[in-house]
Length: 508
Image (cartoon, rainbow, N blue to C red; front, side):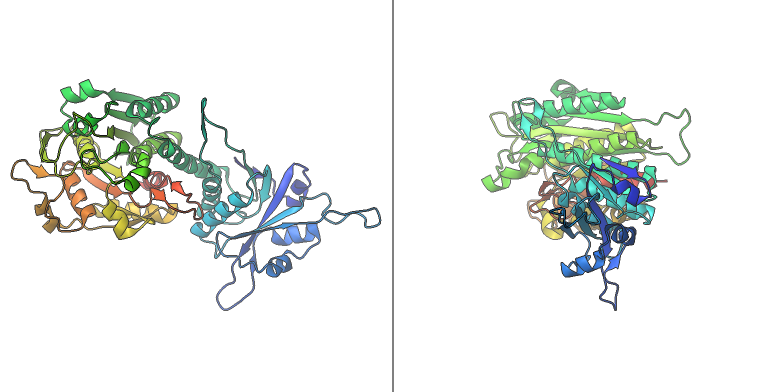
């Protein structure tokens, strides 16, 4: 947890329950080689009777964003020595590098502090004191994201996680702490859901978890099972789920603002998230190595769910609906096949070329449903969709597609402040011909591929957005990480929730 303390640091530090004090140190400015002590460093030096700047220099501490160095002060031994100046103060001082003070630097500083204080109870810090609202928010977000620990599963479910308490000394507004906590919670939710093993995380299990959250938040909920999906023509979702003993679901969750009259500029935003709870590839089966991380193939649905709950907790002026097509892409006697022709929601026929390209089929059904039944002002789809996106952009950026310049600008601005980076990709019209089929309206995967697999997937999905303002986010790269780096953990990263929530904050 994160709370605010009194500005009188010296009084607060005498609290015997404080385990450590964290002091911000900036990197040298251009043309100089001196470290830059930040707010509270001089006060702490005076109270401890130590030149903290000299301690940092002796440790060769650079002040680079996302670095830390811990100093454990000695205790006095024997009466002849007498009490040391810091006898009644925390004996652990943590230098936290804040770089040049940008929001990204402070987010990395927060994550570094979280990792440096694992196992401690209460830590007080002046790192965010005197910073702008956005940088203070970045620091709190970084701390909470860096403090994340994947919950261990036991017979009773997820086990307890260690408690953290970070006390901010200074003038950080409570609203900033609350906003950062909501954003971090949304990312934690995505990480938690994405990390659950697929023998537990069936479409039915996911539906129960969504129901619990919707009931707790007072959100509108609708669940369609195989019978309803058949009756309403969701041919793509049914085909993808046909090879599994766990049938598919389509879940919608809606947050509606409480105001009797819609706020000026309010929109209805629908977020469709790919919810493949495990992906074997179907009959076009994946190699073993590629199958191992496929419990994370429902990250898009987790993002959509986190966004609607996050919007509710922030009391957004916008109405937000999450549409979650949930299925396990398995194989069996009833599996769909390459060469099959499916009739999707709304009547579009699609020739199947590769059963391992199932994500665009379930998204197409869900998007067509959103278009014809939910009347969105803005339609967003989020998916771990193509290996091509991660090959082209790596793990650091999501692939961003839209023909709407205002939406593109909104997402790029949200990426800048959230730290969840995007790269605007082109919708190359010349590639549209690769989706032609001789036996159906569309082929969902090109046979004679022109390259640009992420682009052709986006072009396919565009066919089901109708005339809506539409954004497609391919998060196959940043949704998973092979290493821990700053606020991003190894494994499920939770990428996308903070990005979309920041977009909603600024949407007018």
